[in-house]
Image 1 (cartoon, rainbow, N blue to C red):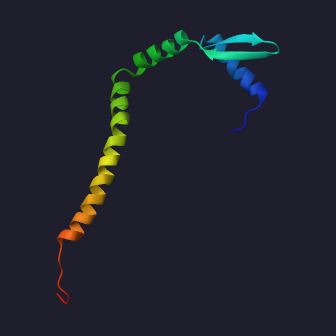
Image 2 (image 1 turned 135 degrees about the horizontal axis):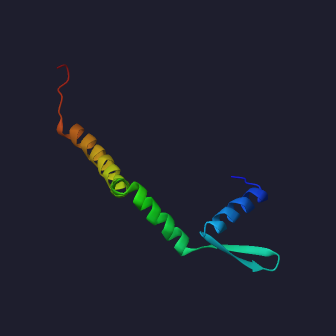
Image 3 (image 1 turned 120 degrees about the horizontal axis):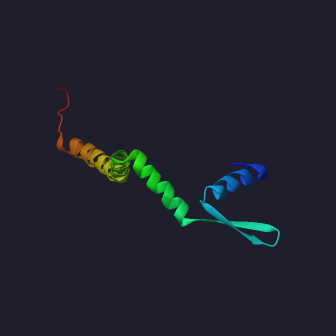
Length: 92
């Protein structure tokens, strides 16, 4: 993904104004790092707005991988089990 330097500067300025990042001058460079309190504020806001829906989504997301792995496991064992257990006589 390519993004211009002015666009990066604008985004970083917005994040800094919102209290999500802080900058530190190192010579001619500016080093940015996340501000924990800014991230916490966003998390709290999202929890207020989304409430229980976010918790349900998190549970779904955390359990989807296990469900998909189990389903593919069942598909593999079920397919081989079905073929191994069935017998068919020629001409019937």
